[in-house]
Amino acid sequence: MDPQLCQDLDWSFPSTHLTEASDGEGGGDTEVMQQETTPVPALSKKTKQPKECFLVQPKETKEGGTKTKKRRKKKITDILAKSEPKPGTPEDLQQLMKDYYSSRRSVIELEELNLPDSCFLKVNDLTHSLSSYLKEVCPKWVKLRKNHNEKKSVLMLIICSSAIRALELIRSMTAFKGDSKVMKLFAKHIKVQEQIKLLEKRVVHLGVGTPGRIKELVKQGGLNLNPLKFLVFDWNWRDQKLRRMMDIPEIRKEVFELLEMGVLSLCKSESLKLGLF
Image 1: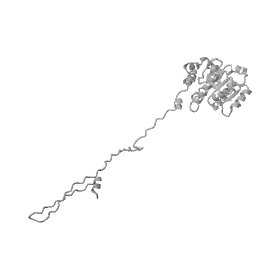
Image 2: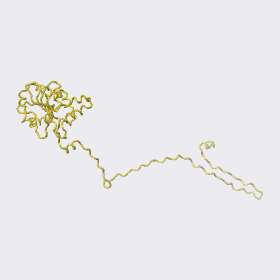
Image 3: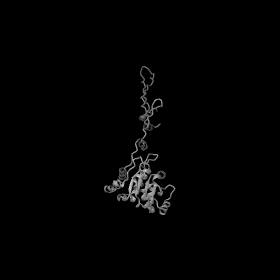
Image 4: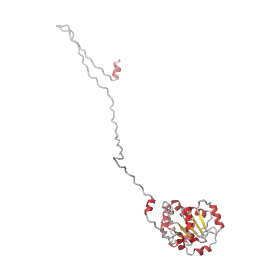
């Protein structure tokens, strides 16, 4: 092999020194050649970096360890189930209005939303049925009913959270309504145009329904709020989830939108009274 190639490849070969004994006078024998070898350097290898080791913790068995239970978050229904029911007050309605409009109105505009105490009926202390409550807050109902002959309007509106609840309220007010004409004002199975035609044809004294449908009737001109004398909220009743009507965001939004459609101005003029049943 070419020596130059060996040098480039960094190969090493043992160097050999041969020594011959000189022929002496006393003998003609030749001494055996002595061989000296130099140690061969080891080939250089790249040192490997130590690898990281990860210790795997053994899983706890059911016998050896106890599982930690996650803490269950409290739901609003759990809190309400343990709390005692409290009757709604005018202050509750005022505070809800401030909270709802706080991000949209200025301080001066918020003050204009304040309603005087005189526009509120006596609150339900949770001992009344609907008929007994209405008899107490509307002692002159029979006279008012007889004098009312305007179509496309009602003397009293009772606002609740659902159609099913509206039917329950209509059945529970039999002792109060007497010969009064009552109309269902909710969206379930009844079209808006059908309700508008009924309001145009006959005189209605009482309307019971949801704020969304009542708002739509007012918007389309089917219901005039000016002759309205009483607006009663089904305030304290709770559904299966223990929510009051004003605890439901959609209902709360529709109620405040309805109040802005002339109800607040009627309250301030003291021609309309608000009740919290």
